[in-house]
Length: 110
Image 1 (cartoon, rainbow, N blue to C red):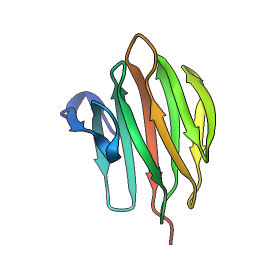
Image 2 (image 1 turned 45 degrees about the vertical axis):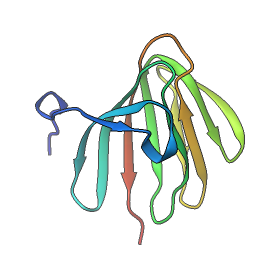
Image 3 (image 1 turned 90 degrees about the vertical axis):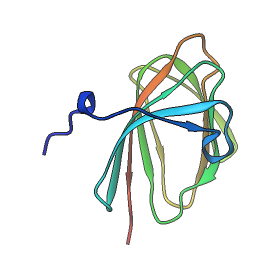
Image 4 (image 1 turned 30 degrees about the vertical axis):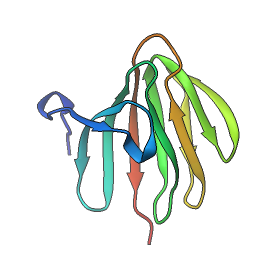
């Protein structure tokens, strides 16, 4: 199955999960998996949240920022991958000078 993000309208989510500014995303959701092309403008963040019933894998395409995972800061940039297993918490912050662009995959767990 091919997902063409060029054909999906970008959605702007203000203060996503309690974060700052907005999280811009193009998303696919089949009820079992969410696959998103995400973008955080400089100064934007996704609020701290715990993955209950799912996990999340994020692959960074461009920009730089940080993820705080279970209280530990991780610097992120293009080419790196962050994984948040079910039952763990994280937040993502664009503290760089350009958009932080990434793919995120969130599968549900039984």
